[in-house]
Image (tube, rainbow, N blue to C red; front, side, top):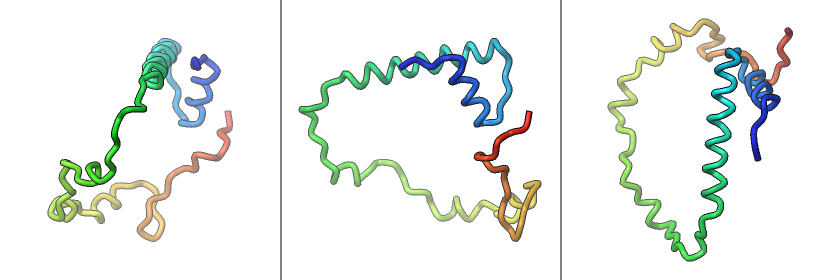
Length: 100
């Protein structure tokens, strides 16, 4: 599957982004390179790979430590947000159709 300029325009419209034609061409190229890599990965034979779900549960990644979460001043973060209602952040709907 290749991505074409029409697909790029659709993605930009959904994300409410506007970029130059040069950036669109660069994005088009980058996304097609990524898709080509994914196509190569899909061809890899993984039939003989043993997947042990129990091992994956014992991840070597650390858990977020409580003190890190406590360092965030939520009220300060929320106060800097332009559009708030009852302590919640309001953002534009991604499903509304743009005018223009």
